Image (cartoon, rainbow, N blue to C red; front, side):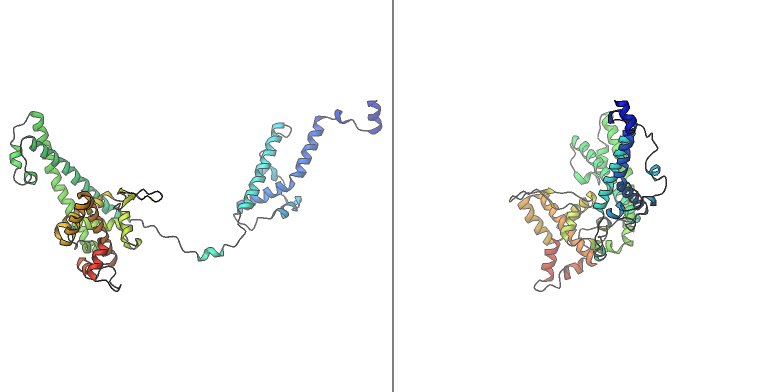
Length: 371
């Protein structure tokens, strides 16, 4: 029966057809179904190569694109040449086309379809101040001197401990008139060796620090801004030069609070809900400049009666350490406004920073802004 049916109809039943036949039919259907996807992928690749939206077509144009417009061998350019009769190859091909179709949909979704003319009138991004090569080199000079001073301080503290062990308590007089007495103490062999090495290191560091200090003074003579800041009581050439180098352009700060925050002289805030808590200072920025401002503020407190009264009031309320930091913040803000306005200390006291505002005397404005 099967033989007669085959001879009459010229075809064989479904179950007797070869597997190759069904693979070819499935492959042809997939090719017909994926024509639009392949054309869209080809246009997407050319669009990405040209990097312009002019070559990008819509989905309808991609579907209606003539298949004869495709160059010969375009499949070999996109896909690697693999065996066609392998089942794994068919799976990889289908996965590859699905991936390219997904890329096409994502590109269509992310491509903006609106005009970008409104971006022409957008304000430019703020410029970030970057210190110059000379600025960075001068900072190395200040840092080198600062580290040398720290090393000398540690050596002097150790020698003070040696003197205290022998019953000699003279503080600063130890380096002025009591050094021979320190050297004459009879000590054990290794204690004597330690005293000798520390004194030798101290004698070696003093000329180096003096040379670096002289170099800083020479650089201050070339900088007009540092000379203006050095006119403030308690501010020397080292503090003035460090302030100019680290602050850079004063116009990049809008007020004194930003300068204090930049130098890490503002309290750290840890607030939640209705509860507000202010902790220690943030200690951001340059630790060297913060150290120099604290030292200079103590000299200013001893020089100016107004600063001394303010410091004494804060010390009685909050303690000595917090009062020193508050005076350093006040000095930093005062130096900032002097630097921004281009004034020396006398002009700062006379005019202040808001002299044009009515109803405020210059001295009161100066006191308010400096703090």
